[in-house]
Structures are given as C-alpha cells and as structure tokens.
Amino acid sequence: MILPADKKLPGNFETLRRAVGELVENSKANRGYGYRLTLEERKTRGYGNQSVPTRISFDSETDFFKFIGKAGEAEKILSRAAEIREKIPGLAPWVEQNPQKIFNYLDVWDDLLKVLLYFRDNPGPGMYIRELPVNVHTKFIERHKPVLRELLEYIIPGQINRDGETFEERFTLKSAVPFVRFRRLDTAVDTGIFTLSDDIALPVDAFNRLTPQSQHVVIVENQMTFLTVPPLESSIAVYGGGFNVEILKGVGWLKSKTVIYWGDIDEFGFLILSSVRRHFPGTVSIMMDEETFFRFKEYSGRGVNTKEKDETELNLTPGELKLYRLVREGNHRLEQEHLPQDYIASRFDKLMKDIRRQLNPRSRISPEKFDADSG
Image (cartoon, rainbow, N blue to C red; front, top):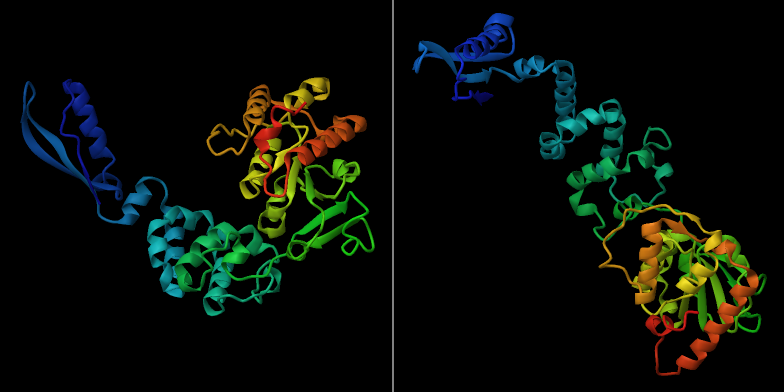
C-alpha cells in the first residue's frame, strides 16, 4: 500500500524540520513496524538542501493494521474471511466487500455458516424456521434475518422467490398466517358466515375466500371501537389494528364493497388511511375530519411524530390532507375511544344516508364527494 506524500512544504523551516522528524521517528525503520518512509534530498527556497518525504508505503497489511492499532481486529477479520471463503466459496465477493460486517458478526459466524450451509444444500425447505434441522438457538435465525438474507442472495441466487417480501416468502419457508377479526353489524345478512357468532376470526386466506352479501365494510383501527361500532345496514366491521391492516391488501372481494375507514385523528391514522386507499381507492373515511377534531379537541393528546414529510404519495382528499398537516405540525392525537357513542352513531347514520343518496348500480364511491359533507 502506497500513500502519496504531500508535496507542499510548510513555509516555516522549524515546522518543516519538526514534521519530517515526526515522520522519521514513527516510521518502520525506527519502530520496527508501520510505514516505510522514502526521503529525497531537495533544494528548497530559503532553506537550502533538505531531506523531504516523497512516499509513504506499507509493506504488508500487518504493518498497516498494527500502525493504526487494529492488528487484533484485523487478524480476526482475516481469519474469519479465510474460513468463510473456504467453506462457502460463493461468498468470496461478499467477503471482499464487507470486512466491517465480518467483524460486526464475529461472535456468531459459526452459527451463521451452519444456517447458510443448510440452505445451500436444502434450498426451499418449506418448513417453519424453528423446524429447520440446524443446531443453533431457536431464535437465532429470526434475530439474524437481515444478514442471512443478504448472504443467501450470493449462495442460492437461482433458488429465491424474487417476489417474496418477507424472509419466509423469499426462501420458501412456512410462516404463521395472520388472522382477520370481523363482526356482523346487520343480523339480517351473511347468516351462513356468522353461524356460531357475530364476532369471528379467520386466517386471511380463508377470509379472502368468503363471499359476503354485506355491501359495506367498516375497517376500524382500535379494538374497543371495533367492538362498539353501532348496527349498520348490510355492513360488517373489520378490526384493522393499525398498520396490520396491510394484510387485507390481497382480499379481492373488498374491491366490490364500499370500504369505510375509521382511524385515530393523528399522523399515523392518516398514513394508515392512505395505505388502505392505495389498495382500495374508493375508501371513504369517517370521523377523521375537522368537525370531529375541533369538537372534541379538549380530549386530544400528544401524538407520535413519524418524521413523514413527503406528501406526494399520500392518498388523501383535500380535507383529509389539510387536517393531516394540522395534526402533524401540532403533534396532536385524538383517539377514537374519546368520541361519545351517540356522536359515533349519528355520524355513521349520516354517512350511510349519504352513501345511499350518492350510490347507484352504475356508479362508484368517490372519497372526495364526502369532504364537503363531513360535518
């Protein structure tokens, strides 16, 4: 390794003498390790002939790492790098590019290699993570998914589900299927689905296979408000659970229903609404408006700022966007639980009347239609 020396000499002779002296004193010739210093005799303006440095070089990696005080770390990294390349040659490019990551995981490489070797020899195992016959701690793979995912990209590139978003999907593993909890708001419909109870939960794939006759689906962010949504004609309520509502994105039959979303009036609530509307564009919000916020503002508290500033991708109506900015800048949060039940019932009653008035067999609900009538 060669480092060019600075060719610009100090303007002061004493500074030049001291700088060259320090370089000589700390060189390999003097200390037995470190850099090798090449000096040349040069004629300088004002100082006559002087020995000045022209090149600084390290004979080996050992000299360099010892000089910067990292000899121990370097030895461990080089040793692990050699072991990784020997056991899994396909990781050689990764090893060359990631010495710091080798060091970061220094204490767990034995177990990382066990997992990687298993997947190399058994791609797409189709089991739960904890079923894999790998002699590591039961939570080891879950805790090291990011680095394992990165490494497996090098080892089994042709055996990866590129459309998979999760670790399990990408490497053909089983995963726990999320459940959807929903309840009937109209006892006159969907008697076949709600045979045993008006409040049930199904795996999301089973939920997707339903053919409910209900025309309206109310997605509610919080559990208690989900349980207390008032009776509504031809409607069911779905417990969204915050951003967990994303599990509904593949439920095809929701696209044929009027989807109503009710979340907290805070930054998160509007971001979740935007996410729901990305999958179901006709989604109508309820009680996420200025009338509700200012009427019950005394019950609001401090929100959690998400640092989200880019509004270009938000699927919000003008009225929603205005309130989103207000609660974001003021860090406000009005939770659903603070709204009185009679107000909730009156707002749902008004919304259902508006939907019946605006909806006909050939039209689709437009969220913007409800901005002006939100109160």
